[in-house]
Length: 392
Image 1 (tube, rainbow, N blue to C red):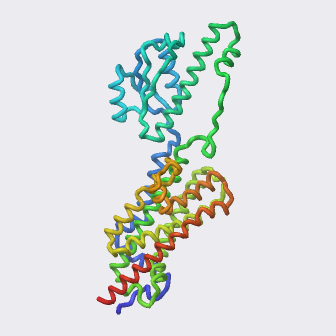
Image 2: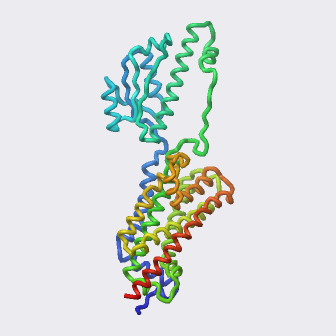
């Protein structure tokens, strides 16, 4: 039987062998190094503006009065909206919305000015927007409510001044009897980068960890063969020796992007960074366990990558960042529990945003003990494939 550096049970020899495998494949080297780093930097660049502004909307003004133009100016004055086009009819505005040229359009009816003055019937201006773009739709709706509120207050103040002999202050008080103050928590500036990027990058990181684990195991399998790989070794220790260098690298990448978020960019951190690092390490091992399970199901890299892709594809969607987990159906919730990053992101949010006690956040990792089950299954598959190879 041939010998290999793995039989020496030395991490140094394992590192040398893995470096040989990595350096001998430029594509694999790129996937491990500059591609994930470059992809994460690209994600940050996409959202680096932080706050969405000047979202284009259209106007369909059938009234063409001073009051309708004032309403349009209120919409255009909001930082988030920009009146970019004036349409002659609803059909053209709808087509522009479908084509993505605008995110919304406002329809002002013919008798709008008369309805505003007489309040009979109550005036109606209708805003149509594409709710498929969840985040953009929320911003458009929020800005429209703000613009409409200011316009309504101005109109009612004028009506109060015209119908009663009173001061401007009292007219404004009668027009807006209850004033509301909305204060966002945990992301005071509504910064998109701080909201999305810390969730997008862990989702990519999970996909990378699972997929590259499959590729690393496939390269060792082709180079050594299972009988040589696990000769004179327990299955767990043989697997651990090979995957340890990759686990260290994946964890280092995770710590690198945390440092970029909370030290280089100085994003708010209300809790303890070390708790998030512990969660990252646990997530790294969970991802590598799942990648190992997918590979040793068949010892076929192509099939294993297909399993990994299907498993990790909904990572970001099921994290509960842009769509609340409480509104997910049973299948989505079940799949969410299977994804390591779903447990990790709860720890990250609880520390970075909420500043919860360390013990409370670490308790969120307890469900990850369940990944011992796929680990046991994986070792069983390893044993089966080793016995089959030896028998041949």
